Length: 94
Image (tube, rainbow, N blue to C red; front, side):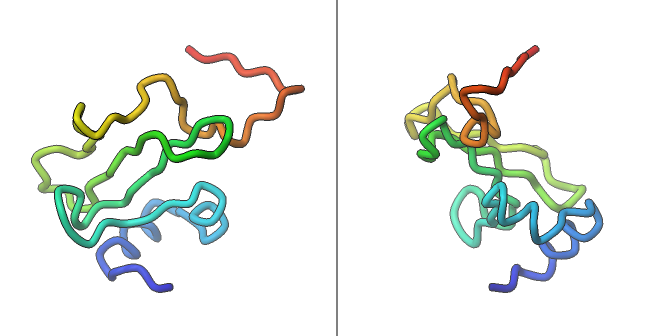
């Protein structure tokens, strides 16, 4: 599907490719607290959605990034990209 113009323009400006959108399952919010933001999902090693970061696409937003509220129950332990790690690979997190 097509993304709203503002989010699509931001993605082009940041050189985000269609392949990256598909690989990382990037999305956008059309309503609610995250409305008008690029949504970056965080999945655990089993590919279950456990958290997110929502990035503002306008420069004049008060907060550039929004994280889940405490009551949403998001995991603080998951790391972005974790679902793509393989057991034989080694990850060093700093």
